[in-house]
Image (cartoon, rainbow, N blue to C red; front, side, top):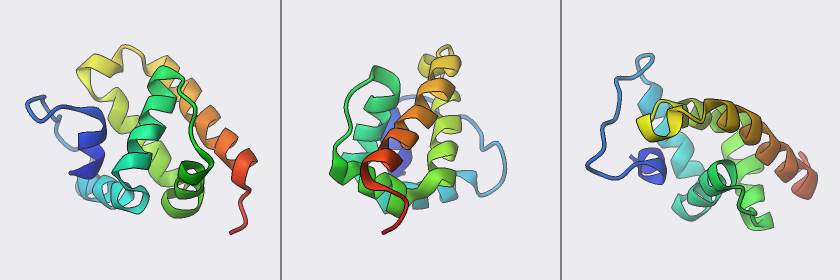
Length: 107
């Protein structure tokens, strides 16, 4: 799963789906943005890294807000990240909104 590989190692536990089809939808989201930009978004959310304009275009125009929010929910389901849920839910929208400011909503 592309999205899972963005945030967990292969040997880490992936929790049960919160609802049927969630992981399939998350995988589709990951395919829209690609691994390089997906990792960049995750780093921007978790470690306050900058995100390139190219990856902002992928995030805003290919992946979209809904997929981004689903990724945030997935992030906090991970044991190593869940303790930082407040940070993820604060920083996640900031990253998305910053990208909207960089590239606009119109494509």
